[in-house]
Image (cartoon, rainbow, N blue to C red; front, side):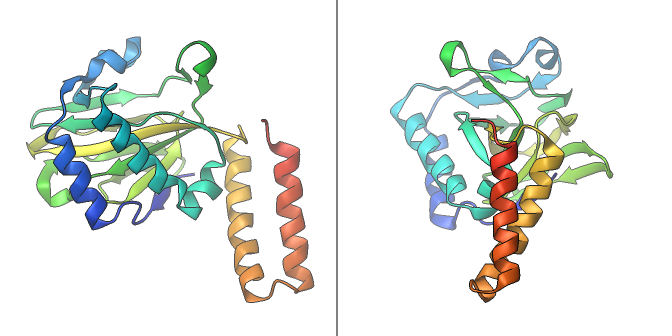
Amino acid sequence: MLLHLKNILDTDKLGNICEMLGKVPFIDGRHSAGMAAMQVKNNLEMQQGTQQAQYLDQLVMGSLAENADFRGAALPFRVAQPVFARYHASMRYGDHIDDPIMGSGPEKFRTDVAVTVFLNSPKDYEGGELVIQSSFGEQRIKYPSGDAVLYPANSLHRVEEVTTGERLVAVTWIQSMVRDAAKRELLFELDQARNTLLQQNSEDHTAQQVDRSYVNLLRRWAEV
């Protein structure tokens, strides 16, 4: 499932993030890439471990966690610390698939879902589209600042070369409670339907049936 998440970050948060990103150190993005991805990756990433990085992590991930569509689609069990990436002119990230396991030691987790949050306006740069291979063909994504895209982490994807300007994004990965992507999509659609029915009339018999079906399917399929 490929899902457009709108208005994850408001104007004030975006301004705060972009201002702070102008003050923190960035390093070669290849340091976080796997062996295959390292060959096609050319970007900069914010150095972790600073107080500013911790604040930015909390700001972005807290905003994502507040979004009902994100929670319903990802069904998060473990969530990675986001990577803040910067692409100057001539930078790109060639075709790759995200590592299946990230982290180290007891912090290891499986990457089921990826999320890219767009931090600056598409008017700020030329090129830089996120291109995701899906069952419906190539999807070229360049959303407004504050929006995000959620997609399966096992998708072949790339970032086209930025020809002018600067592209700023935050990327994170999620281990879902439901490993299977098709089951997650079914649960998301069922969750959307049950929320609509419950909002219309929570006492309605059909609404309650759909609610029970969602809850029990999640109980059957969840791995925690």
